[in-house]
Amino acid sequence: MIEQADQIFVHLLHWLLGFLPVGIQGYVGVLLCVATIIVTFPALFAIAVLMERKGLGRMQNRLGPNRVGPFGLFQPVADGLKSLTKEDIVPLSADAVVHFLAPVFLVVVVFMGYAVLPMGRNMTLVSMDSGLLFYFAMGASTELSVFMAGWSSRNKYSLLGAMRAVAQMISYEVPLLMSSLAVVMMTGSLNLNKIVEAQNQYTYGLPHWYIFTPWGFAGFVLYAIAGTAETNRSPFDLPEGESELVAGYFTEYSGFKFALFFLGEYVGMLSISGLGSTLFLGGWSAPFAFLTWVPSWIWFFGKVMLSMCVFIWVRGTLPRLRQDQLMNFAWKFVLPLTLLNLMVAATWRFMPEGWLRWVVCSAILVGVYTLMARVGMRREHFGPRSYRYAE
Amino acid sequence: MLGEGILKGLAETARNFAGSFVSAERMTTVQYPEERIAPIEQTRDFPFLVYDSKNPGDGADWEAGLRCVACQICEKECPPKCIYIEKSTDKKPDALGKMQIYPARFDIDISVCMSCQICVEVCPFEAIKMDTEFELSTTDRFGGLLYDKKELAKSNEHFHKIHPTEAAEVDARLAEEKAKSDAKIKAAAAAAAAKAAAAAQPAAAPLAAKPAEGESKA
Image (cartoon, rainbow over all chains, first blue to last red; front, side, top):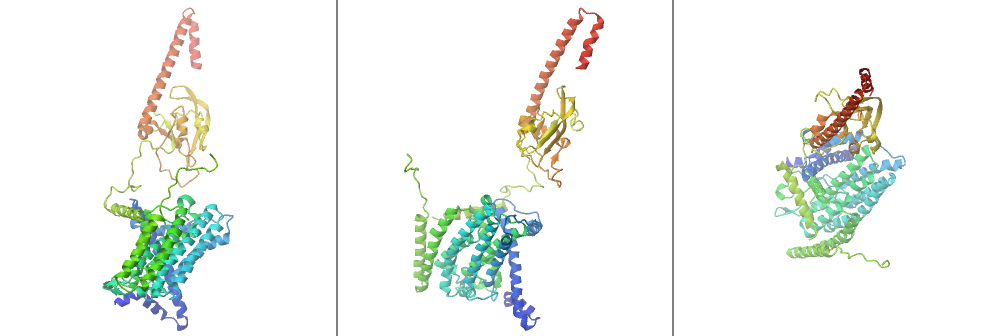
């Protein structure tokens, strides 16, 4: 029975495919899985948007949307219908083809990333040996779509937003990769299924999730920072900065194309959350040994939605960074720490098991963090302005 | 320590998030169509034309009682040029009893108006004041937002209701002016009477009809 609930979607797929001739079962199976992903994540996107609007409202001591349906639960439906019925305006001087392709490309690329994410036991669309690499290749392609949008709009705000976005995304792509590389070093595989399986073990009822190791914890924090920047979320939402760039690279988008950008952004967040939980939070594995009877896909989606809550919480808390702060933070703080974290992971790997490696690894990380916080992030004090020539 | 401030901030938002469920005093907003906050006295949005009515409340003499004399100062001063005035060709007595022209047409396009209150400040006749009515949405964005004389006319009682302090000041000022002008008229009438009496003394009775004729002409 419990086994049934865990594998319910897998059995459902096999049962459906049983009605078809053997020759086309493979193709139809893939199509069905793709369709499921394309339906599930926009549904989660709707829930996430509602959570965000209600949650942010609560953080600001407001009620949030409460007019459409009971407690405003149908607000996403109303939003969707509104964006569908709005006029789609393409600026006269815009490059129409690229302008049209940018949102489509973004959504396609973002959904491609889900192909390798294990969403439950035996629930991976493609169990690729280079899954992580594929994921990052797809994730990096979103930058292209952002720049396509900014460039084709022929609008200075769009272009500024796109330039900021590309600078930011490329800067944070590096720490994002580096922080996940530690996991690859420990697991010895780029296959996300193997990464989850490596974490799906228990000692004394506690899981072997990577976040419960010094290097894993540091890696997770760095991954979360880089992931937030990668998805252009607050406090790293400079590319779209509503208050300064009138929504940045999608200034010139309206109607359904705008909705596609919005969808792409949130589905990207869901996917970054999914990868984060796969790499550090044990993917679909349960947090305690006695909870393993709960279906694996519940754990995966629970972890994803929990990460979304943290995204919203952070958005409600932090103000937007300045461009130079953003870049300084990426190159002077996050990147050195991810490199150090790789070394720490290697130390952890080659030291014998026991308390000593805990102490050594934690000490290195905490020490360097404190040092960098003191030195690297020190506020510069400028004296009174002096002039060399004009006096 | 780096990151301490972020944790403090996160705790603060979490406190607000949880607090919003338990304490109603925290909520800074009200649920608008059902609940309303009474506007503060300085509230203002769009201008209206004040009229004095003899029987407060019936609104019958909105046209006769308009204080506006179509001097067009507001029309000229209006920065976004949202006021349109057409002068009348005939005259009618104003509040002081003086014959004045009146606006045959007085339109304000509230889709253009920026609520700057300059028209109110420049009006020498206390004829245009700021209103507090804000639920003005309409399905007709051209005609529905162009207010004519009838839609703009509101009684002095309405003015008293929305801005009591300002209205009391305005009324005191107008009463003073009225008293001054009455005194002047009385003095002029007295002087004229004295003159007429002086002129009538030596002359015979038939000539006394002439000043009466002259008065009716004026």
